[in-house]
Structure formats: structure tokens, C-alpha cells
Length: 270
Ligand SMILES: Cc1cc2nc3c(=O)[nH]c(=O)nc-3n(C[C@H](O)[C@H](O)[C@H](O)COP(=O)(O)OP(=O)(O)OC[C@H]3O[C@@H](n4cnc5c(N)ncnc54)[C@H](O)[C@@H]3O)c2cc1C
Image (cartoon, rainbow, N blue to C red; front, top):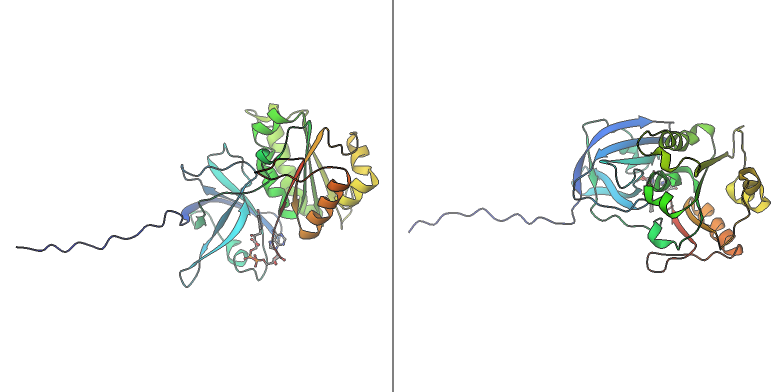
């Protein structure tokens, strides 16, 4: 009798990240860049969710971090908007990727900055600082947003004017998109402010809400639970202050399991 050697079956972890190809990379400042990856056909997400992405570590174990998907869920490819932390374990290397490189993409998108976590309203606010704009680059390019709301106001606050370029680019290109931009015309507005450099609008969003300037600039009534819903994403201080402000206006925090008036996600842990 001949015994044939059978190769050991290699166990495949169904939750292991997939290897995606970098399609493009654009640098905005020495702190910010965006990149596009191939999207596996099986990768489904709700606009506004985040996913673990990363690079293989030198010793083999992958180095992964949470990233908001900045592209909408109908897009064939995946866009991300990233910080460059000089000594950051991931971004000190990620900022050097070029088209053709591989980036790891997790399998389970999650998050609270999604329509499912909000009850119906008339006006949607997307309040952001820094890379906290990333999930809103997804939400504001999703047709569902304009089915659900009559008006969409996205705010973006950064220290320097150059850091506002990405949000301006996304809003302008979406409004001018010949296929889909019509959905957002007359509904979507960007309210950009800068805290450090001279700019047409200056100041922190929280101060501009408290003083009422944000509402008078936009020509809308002050926050009202009956009509307004909000998604908030930014630094730890920003999200903390915004939560208190929302609650002081009578809005209730929601979640996927208990939708309500506003939802929050921190843009990073630190
Ligand atoms: C839910 C969630 C979603 C996220 N989405 C994004 C995203 O879309 N884009 C993105 O660039 N980052 C995002 N982050 C942060 C990201 O996970 C990493 O922290 C970041 O890529 C830096 O990784 P690192 O390993 O280089 O440094 P880390 O060791 O992770 O961070 C080092 C320090 O850098 C600072 N830092 C980290 N991220 C940021 C940031 N985004 N803005 C300002 N300071 C920061 C913090 O002080 C932190 O302690 C998200 C984090 C969370 C929790």
C-alpha cells in the first residue's frame, strides 16, 4: 500500500484583514494626506462608519488603527483622509505609501455616525474638527442623506487655512458632480472656520454656537430638537464640549440600538 503525504491544511482566519492596493495618494500639508485603495467586492459598509486599516509590522504582526471611510458606500474604491503623526507607529510609515503598495483593510466596519442612529429630522448638522471631517466626506456624498434631510450643514474647524482644503474640495466637487451633485444643490452647505490664521470665518465651533454667530451667519434658527439632528466628530475636547452643548439645547444622544437626536465619535484616541 502506498501512503501519499497530504499537505497540512492551512487555517484561514475569516476575520483577517485583506491586502488592498493603493490607487492614489495626495498630500495636502506636512500633517495631512488622502489615499485611495481598491475595494473588495465583499466589503460593505454604511456611510460614516470606520474600519481598521494598517500595514504589516516588520516582525510580521499587522499594525492596525481605526480609520473612517471617507468615500460614500456606493463608491467602487475606498478613500481615507489621514493625519501624519511624526512618531506615530502607523502614520510615520503610512504617509510614505505610493500607488501599487499594499495596505491592510479590516473586515468589520462599525460606528455611530450613521443615519440608523438618528431619528428623522429636517436639518442635519455634521460638526467636525481636523480629520474628524473624514466620516462626513462619506455621509454628505450619500444620496440617503438628501432623502432624509431637507438641509445639510457641515462644519469644519482647523487651526490653519491649508487644513481646510480637503473639506472644501469634497463639497465643491460633489455639488458639481454631473451625475449626483443635483441631489445636494440647494441643500448642502460647508461652514469652515479657522482658529489660528486669518480667514473669512474665525473661531471655535463651540464658541460660534454659544454666541449664536454660526446660526446668524447661516440664516437658520438656533438648534432645536424638533427639527435638528447632529453628527459630531473631532478631538476629545471638541466632542466633549459639543455633547454638553447639544444637551443644553435639549438634544438627546443616540446610538445604533437607540436612535435619537445626535451622535458622536472621537476622531482619535489620545
Ligand atoms: C473611531 C476612530 C476613527 C478614526 N479615524 C481616523 C481618520 O479617518 N483619519 C485619521 O487620520 N485618523 C483617524 N483615527 C486615528 C487613527 O486611529 C490613528 O490614531 C492615527 O492614524 C495615528 O496613528 P499612529 O499609529 O501613527 O499614532 P497613534 O499612536 O495612534 O497616535 C499618536 C497620537 O497622535 C495624535 N493623533 C492620532 N490621530 C490623530 C488625528 N486623526 N488627528 C490629530 N491627532 C491625532 C493623538 O494625540 C495620539 O495620541 C481614528 C481613530 C478612531 C478611534
